[in-house]
Length: 563
Image (cartoon, rainbow, N blue to C red; front, side, top):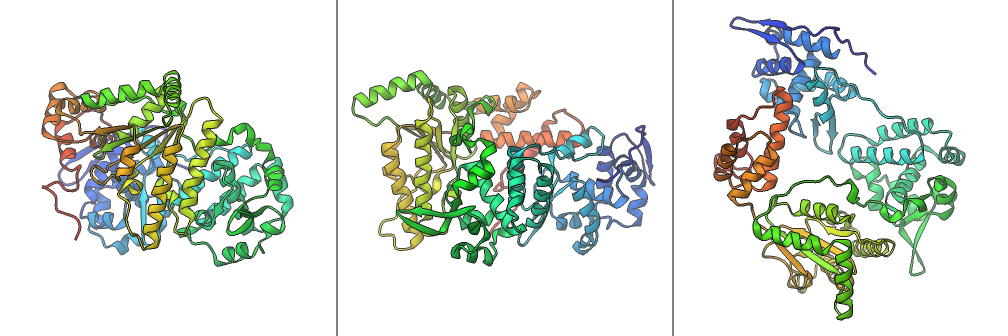
């Protein structure tokens, strides 16, 4: 951990150049002037002379070198962007990109101190500034990253999941993951899990493979792990050839030590699907008492965790949402299902929310779940689809099987949410000959069959308005169209999103800009970020108007992007 040299007393400093004197009272204020002076400066000696007092102030506060302070100021100035490129900063300062590449050591220091996070893709390198860093700088103090200690086996797997998310974002490499996991295993070496794992004497690579598969079982109750799952463990999702070879031939130490086995399907062992053995689950994961976790809860969005959010609807939508909320309440839903069953009708409730992006379809599902106390089983269509022939169909069947198991073990059926389901609700292809088209049709046919026998609640959200397959249309009992808000509704949304906005300004924005609720929320978030950077909470209506003008990429005032 770097030792930060923090002055005991905040001192304002006068910055003098040929034309002005500026009083600096905070790190962010110093950053603001540094960025202004850096524009087209080529970061030359004259720039460092003009910015010297600002740089000294921030350097003492943060314990960073002059160049590191300048670089951090430029990153923070672009903190709204989650993909900050060195080429962009080079262009702003009038430098060649190669000059910034020569500053890689200083950028690496900022990354080690966690002031920035780097995302290293196959063909690109970008950066972002985490929100806790902005909060620290706004408080005029250096940011210190503190990693909470891992105390037990459950916390170990929670941290493993966190690290995998960082790997997925390109912010962590496989090698770094291995080192971090080794450190945590040392922290929990006295747990039954760590002791039994150590006794197995697995080599580093095999140990990581087993831990990853154990993590999938602990998190998702996953007893069907394919190569497409194992890809997530490695950089750029490339499985080493020896892993595929040893798993297919069962020559891996994980097979030898009876930690994993092939998935059995119709009496045949599948060479491309694997699971933990019962003995591995008992010997190594027994202390987790996974049965007590109610395995079916894994991966659910719990109703109790959903924050209340006021949504503004047009009158037609408001009436339909209120009716659906009433029906999905525990007592009412049970009565409705009983009546349907007696009448010989399907008991399941399938609903579709459709309309333009940003109109509140997904958030409405979350608020329905919160009000009715129902958890949500969210379906990511992209993750269901697999490049392996036959895998996608098995994934979708397993999904509905799992939903049925959850419903049978609970008093209150959760909501099965197919979010952004455009990819599976479109018109089926007739006479499909390509394998991918046949797969798409098979997935749709399975969903249609499952909707017929569904006992619970399924809600699909989609931007489709004209391309919905008629077979799906018939099976949705409730079809709610989400229109863009009226001017009156937009004014209320503006007031809700930007507290302190006057009635007249809200009416002006609502009348001038035909924005969706999601677009208004985007602009409000941008205002919040800018407020943090500037250290001011006041609303400047001209700034909000500028944000509205720049919200859409197809704005007529902007140059078009594309071919």
